[in-house]
Length: 219
Image 1: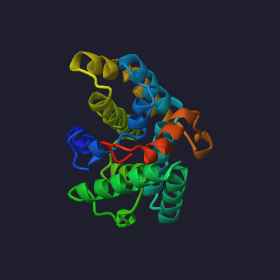
Image 2 (image 1 turned 60 degrees about the vertical axis):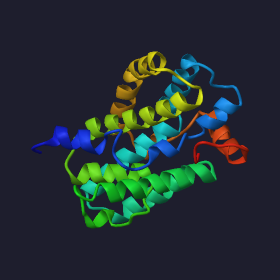
Image 3 (image 1 turned 45 degrees about the vertical axis):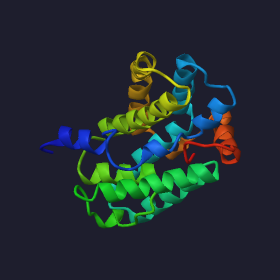
């Protein structure tokens, strides 16, 4: 479509107003527990999430939502939304994906008012995948952009929590470039059979966050 690059950049901009800055996806608890103390630990933590953790599952669900929307399959989209909600392994992660999905749906209205997307309580990967399909973005490009957004949000949470200076966090984004690209491409070809997480420590950190006495983030 004409303007697809600018649409991609707009819909997946770090400045897109969905409030992702309020969520750490369990990183705050991992920092409090002493697991993330420097840039190397942050990079490795996020790399696992992207390649075989909660991030990977989100990318697969994103691609499936994209396909269901392109096919006009509202039933499949609803089933994917239920699955994405069920795969959120803690109350805060469930709240995170639903609130961010709702905010994304609202912010993306200038680009999309498709009937399939009128449910504003879709989990984030379902809402984003649906919008990407409606506006006609290439699947692999959109999945990679979604993965990059996921990584950027976690890096910026780590900037505030570890903390990390510019000389530390910029190389993290550079180093994670290949895994972002590879995961986006894999997700675009994946099926629901490829869902699965091997990031149990992150999942536990997300649950631990609910019991922290002092918190900067909502997850």
